[in-house]
Length: 100
Image 1 (cartoon, helix red, strand yellow):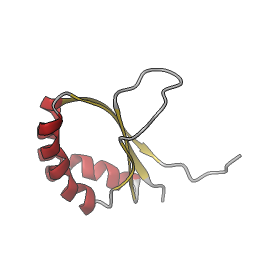
Image 2 (spheres, rainbow, N blue to C red):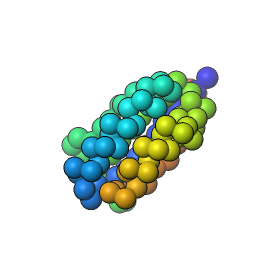
Image 3 (cartoon, rainbow, N blue to C red):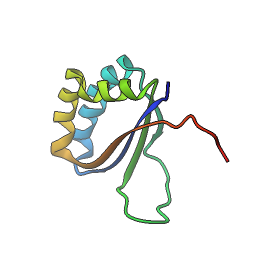
């Protein structure tokens, strides 16, 4: 079974209020096996556009990633993030096939 990933590019407009979202998303992310692989930090943007904050969260499966997003707990946390940030987010299935 392939892992699932949330890939988020976020601009935070109110850092203090954003902290409430971070606290609120901890429980649903934990419940669905979410694990941060990237959470802000230094980055280069060699092509295309980006936002100030980049986040990658790994889940044990693509379905777990979808279920977490759609869970009541995460949807409540999302209500705290939307007024204080702008985001582009994709949920993607991992790849387990041949490598170069």
